[in-house]
Image 1: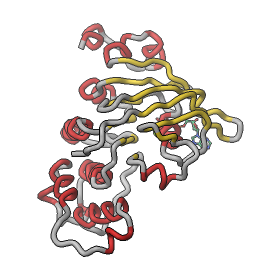
Image 2 (image 1 turned 90 degrees about the horizontal axis):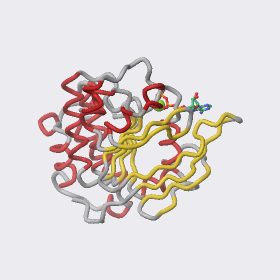
Image 3 (image 1 turned 90 degrees about the vertical axis):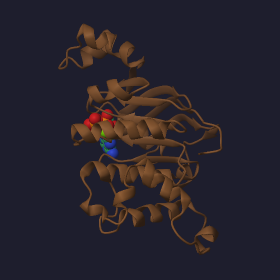
Image 4 (image 1 turned 180 degrees about the vertical axis):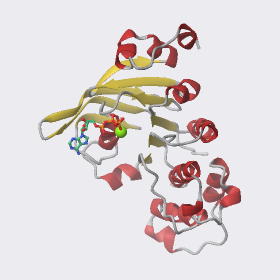
Amino acid sequence: MTEEPLKALEITDVRVTFDGFTAVDGVSLRVGPGDLRFLIGPNGAGKTTLVDAVTGLVPATGSVRFGGHELLGRPVHRVARLGIGRTFQTATVFENLTVLQNLDIAVGAGRRPLTLLRRRRGIPEEVERALETIGLADHRERPAGTLAHGQKQWLEIGMLLVQNVQLLLLDEPVAGMSHEEREATGQLLRRVGEDRTVVVIEHDMDFMRTFASSVTVLHAGRVLSEGTVAEVRADPRVQEVYLGEPVTEAEVEA
Ligand SMILES: Nc1ncnc2c1ncn2[C@@H]1O[C@H](COP(=O)(O)OP(=O)(O)OP(=O)(O)O)[C@@H](O)[C@H]1O
Ligand SMILES: [Mg+2]
């Protein structure tokens, strides 16, 4: 799909401070190309703030590189132009427009003005492809507002795909979803992750266990633990932070 080689995300000693409060406190992590990395941690751990820093929404110190480009210090739209897209904890689609119109607008957002001016016939190939990937091909004419909660999240992911995003950062994409929707979303992330780098912020341990290829645990603005799902779950420091959820032997081995 994307002809460019897969790129790694390299975060080095990133710090974000709000009025003297350090929300992200020297985080370093590397997400390899093609990885499906889960970023977990208790409320207030700094997960969303770290993604905000990567995407240029909050000022940060340290270094964030993607495909060799330094991202810190770039305004939001210039980070986006490097092929980096994110979703928010609540889906932001245009409710009154159809699925197709939403995707069309997203294509436009990723285009240069000259290309936009050129008239095109039919549905652009990238839109057709995204409709298939997100499983909404049969719902293209529906107003986005009438979609189920899960479908809206998929549409939002589709809006990033048509912009040929190579790094996706998703903030709690399965929050509020039914079990079936979670399963479908996990499969979608796997497909999307085949030729892109994906970072998923998530609270749901079952979801993580099924779909993560690697995990970073944040706690109080720092990296507490990192590794495979099994490694992270076997880490006593992680168990301590997640005391509410005891880890069984079977789960550690799973
Ligand atoms: N704009 C802001 N101004 C001041 N403090 C903030 C701001 N944004 C976040 N914080 C604080 O920074 C810390 C990290 O917040 P963040 O939203 O990144 O956590 P999180 O890991 O995403 O948590 P959750 O799981 O609840 O979404 C919290 O203590 C939060 O109150
Ligand atoms: Mg958050």
